Amino acid sequence: MSLTVRPHLHHFNPRNGKPTSTARDWTQIYAIYGMDQWQTLLFLLFHAVFFSVLSFTFLFYFEPICSFLETFFLFGNGPGGAARFAAGFTGCVMALSGVCLFFAAGNFFYSSLALHHDMTQRMMGCVGDWSTVKLALDVGCGRGILLNSVATQLKKTGSSGRVVGLDRSKRTTLSTLRTANMEGVGEYVTCKEGDVRSLPFGDNYFDVVVSALFVHTVGKEYGHRSVEAAAERMRVLGEMVRVLKPDGIGVVWDLVRVPEYVRRLQELKMEDIRVSERVTAFMVSSHIVSFRKPSQHIVGPGEVRLDWRC
Image (cartoon, rainbow, N blue to C red; front, side):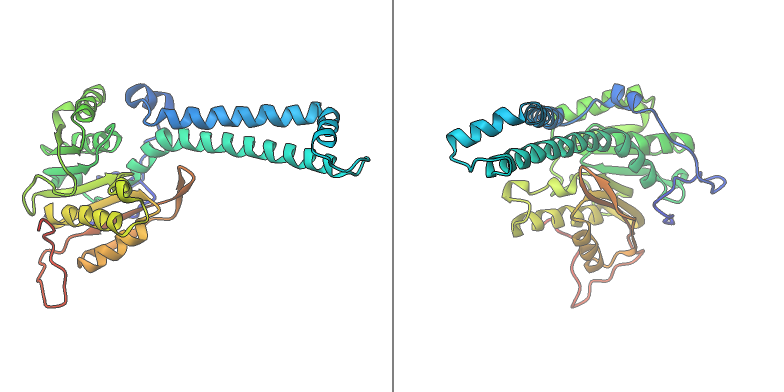
């Protein structure tokens, strides 16, 4: 099987090579998938409102606040005193904090739903011909937005293939199967519980391996910047390469850590490594990186073995 990598920034129709429109209303996406980490969104909104209220308090009660500061903190008196400066500066900081937190909450909500769906459609364009795909794997499938996008591609092209979603939680996999049925692609989807650092599949098993917003979370128990966490992330990449068939395509969308993924893929002798333009997601940079596993991989004296199970 031979797969080609297309540019990341468009979703292509495999029959005519033209971009297709895959826009969906965010309310439809939310109705099916809900939202992960809604506690974070509530946290951001609560503090945005809190700081906004404080800033308006400083605005409408500026003079009493200045008098309070002069009385209890021994600031200098007079219209140009330190108390007025402190009150004005504090009010401005509160207002700016409120605006930034509202923006962060909006970006978090957009990244979790509309952007997530849009980026999965861009990832689909990295595979040249979905009709030839028999087996695909979604590492860290979560709610199933990417998983169901793959299944939809298989359904559109009339493929008899299937996509396997792997997650660490059995509860998540059961929820993912429900979303697949709601999307009308349940017959193309299989979910499995397992350890992403030791994938429960044989070598050269999948035609396509994908992952979205997951690899950077592996090893977080060691601290994101620790050597141990980096080693765990590299282990996951090694496992993805191991289970990928020769000439198979891997596509990963992730936050912040993409440069280290590219270096590791180069060490593993992957071909056609491509990185998309920067897209801001969850207030940080994100990229899609795609690669192709070579048809033959000869392990020489200076090369790194693909089998990371040891």
